Length: 309
Length: 311
Image 1: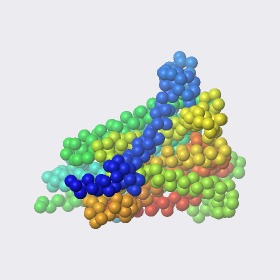
Image 2: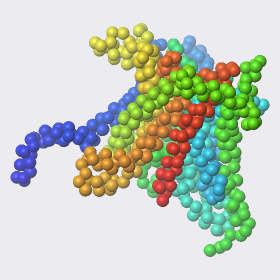
Image 3: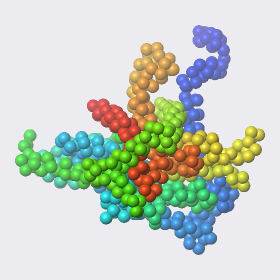
Image 4: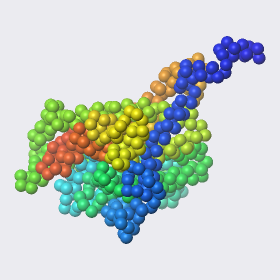
């Protein structure tokens, strides 16, 4: 007791000690760090929140909020509105169309590729794995240029630029994400259950459809939602593979952001953002449910944050 | 142990490669072959009448004249060199800013997140899944400079005694800063997430050991945490660098000035100009070669880390 009082007296009041330790090492206690992290989050989200607020603007301005109204959403959906711009609804339709068509194709190709690569113990599997990883790290500009040049030169007989070409490009772009999500789950399941099924007389196809696919279901559904979120947000590939009549929402933003537009553009961006966030939340919830069933600790959000190659 | 019949073994051997075939075939035709198409256009000619590219599909007929002139333009002092240098400067500054801002944030979330970890992570992941273009649009609105309706940033600045007029962020020397802001804002979530993963993997007992052996918090950080997170930093740096080198929409949206155009803007322009696609394709090949070093480094280091994690 006396010793402790003595030290406090020696260095000053508790408050002074706290300030001195903070100054000696501001990183030691996380106060400074905490402030920094929350400031970062504010910086990363506030501009988007303001952009969403502007979509509800009562005035024409895209920079000053002048009161609440839904008129700019009417400008997207209501053809009788004075602000109606048909190209906005067309862009929304095209974005949804691309995402909905791409989702099943990329998911099926990606899931079969993931199972094939994970269970195939041969020379080709290493090369296949490497090939599968490259689309994840190739700049989209390079992929877009390549697809544009091959579609307009070599495949020009049967691929016309437009929705078909965009779907081909988006599937190519998103297959690898499906493989990554599915592969993580495949490693977690292991080979034992399938091998048990085959020892009991199931054929490889039987074991796959009756044992492996049901176990993989959460990963399959969540990767489908991820494909949806990726394709609805995609800009570069959709733009390179379109000439006319296939404008998506990001393309519309790119074309109109610097012009004197009206807040309907923000409304369109808000709709797109909500759609892809809903898709991602679905993906997280599906993974979380399956983690809980398996009694796995840790949250699905954390798994999602670790989502990496 | 029951021995599988020869029939099943034979079926098993072919079954899994066969499953991989459609996916691999798709990637070969629509991912690998496009690179060949880029090469064929770069090393081909241009149709004299229609100004359409006349690709050389046969490698024996490849003509390196256009490619050579683009390469000389890049190594000499031509337009491509200016764009390329600017790209390097933008990327270097933006990536450094990503590290300086991103590291403390990832570190705090991984080490001190506590009960708020899931909330912090969700808020950090959210921008990752918002459209990049939407996030740029948000900044275009914030930085608006029309005198009758200035954006929020200019309203704050003109309220201070230092600025009388709204700043035109898209033009002048400040435009470089605006584009760099756009790049940092756009790509930093992609840096933070892999770094967070690697910081989160660090075993707490290693930090305790450092403390037990007398390490002060600061030296524990510099001598234990930082070296252990090196892989995460490098992975994050590469993963934000790659798309930055192929970026053309950030300068277009944030500034749209000649002086902020990057190499991606040049490629985008050449590819869509009639008669210029061989130049565009040559520049794309050179850019791909340049980033291939980064890509391969990333893939090798990540697959090594994955193998270690599985053992």
